[in-house]
Image (cartoon, rainbow, N blue to C red; front, side, top):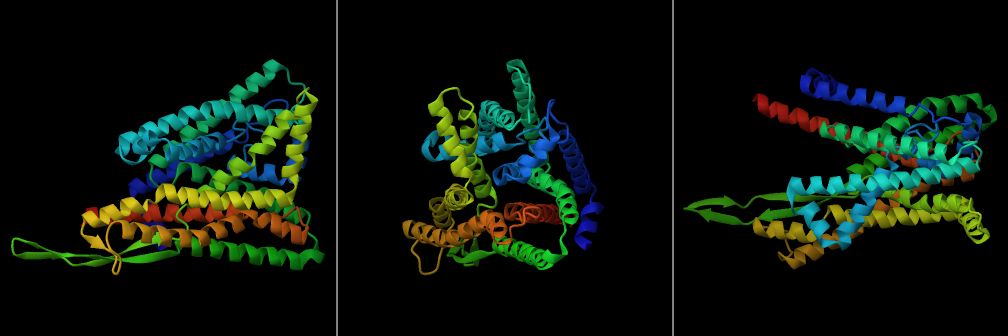
Length: 422
């Protein structure tokens, strides 16, 4: 509470928080403006019975469950970010732009991501509208009506992308993550009301199990997010004009979960793609394409197959994104230039191999944890058979991670201002 009071006593930070809250209000208003011609009762029934659409709704910030003008939320922007991150691994020019050209290079990288977002938004919106038409949620749509809906929803995605970047500029958290967090928080009242309306005293023990698992999950998320392996670093002593400098010791923190929630966001975008393709193909007049679409849809509606694919993708993306954000070669080179070394490890290539080996080992535990969190709803519902209360491990992970990141960024701004005062 003391930190909260201190944050609001600093006018600069207070104004940033109020500005972000105002943008989130605009975002939530947009997420509650429905597209024309929507059958609300069918929408609620579809989302209650479809785990995949419920998961996609999280990343749309709740805009999908309302079939709103921001239908897909920032999903296409996330997909575009995935594509660009993958391309940095295979296109040297993009890697150089992102990692070596400084702020100007990152701005170019971001601009390319924005451009890619537009066609992706068009394709994904068309796929979602085709799925909703097949479920009789959007009815009596002509080709012109479909075109108008695609344009509106694509414009909504671009609008949310802009809002997210405005939030990020205030440096109190990542705009995309905060918007997803806002969607999760906004869904809580409806979830609680549904639980209380269907409450069965005979299932009291099951509800207590849900509560305990939820608290343990939150504790686990905090523990893993804050967990790190400290690598000792020593600096050689140097002589400058008869004066001795250096000789200090410090440590290099290697976080257990360096990738944050990004692997889950990436995995969701990929695991939902076959369902989208299947829903589109199922509407085809060609019997071969229609049967292929139906097969794809039925395969990924199987909770076991869906859970295995989802878990595997989370682990793969955790390793992939960790390799993007942490480069042992560059760390080893920087240490060598600064006269630093790991005790017992030769500088240069040996240090690089040592850091890579340690990173792979701790990332294994981080990736398994993230994968377990991702499939937690499927496992819990499989044991309890309660559909009205969904323990969203992904939602908990995102919410807790975003709060921790926001607190850290605001604390760092408080520290900077304290140094400015003194």
